[in-house]
Amino acid sequence: MVDMILSAVSVALVLLILSSCHRNFLDVQMERHSVLLSIIGCALITTSILKFFSWFAELYILRSIGNIIRYTFIHYTIDEPLWIALNIAVGILCILRVPTNSPTRIITFCLSSISIYPAITYLWIDYRWFSNAVISGKGFLKWSPDWLTVLNLNTGIIHILLLIILTLKLINSYGPPLHMNFSSQFRTFLFISGAN
Image 1 (cartoon, rainbow, N blue to C red):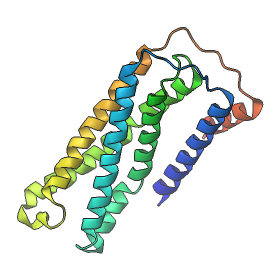
Image 2: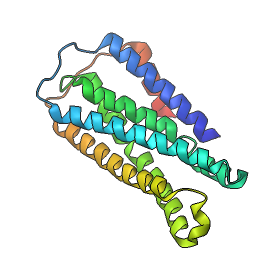
Image 3: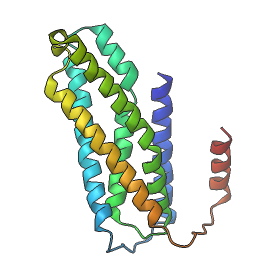
């Protein structure tokens, strides 16, 4: 429950920061030579939607099995939809193709890099779920269909690779350092959030 609350608060703060950056800093110039970022953004949105579909499909299938299995699944993956929504936002930011040293590009880099660890964690959970299906044999087939677990694993692997490629691409795209002037309220917010 605490994970879900912290994830919801972090998504709300990210949306607040993004809206603040959009109002204050977003350049209207578009970078025209970054087709790779657009492709990665579209692929990230597609894999995120597939992950969202498979999470809800698995939750729907587990409701007929019983509460213990369903609650175990929810316990381990309750904040996964929030990370998926964050990855959809990262994909949208990639499609925007903002200039190289803009604050929006820096935010995209930060969000893509912090999304790698949760994606690996959920891939590990999906792998454990799948390995339980293989070990227990036919008894597990009623828990989750084969196509759903394979879809979830394959989508998770592609999703992680896209996040890593995006992060590496954004690291390589930076030129000279960017100097930004923030308001005192925003600096206070950054200081308080960094102190925690």
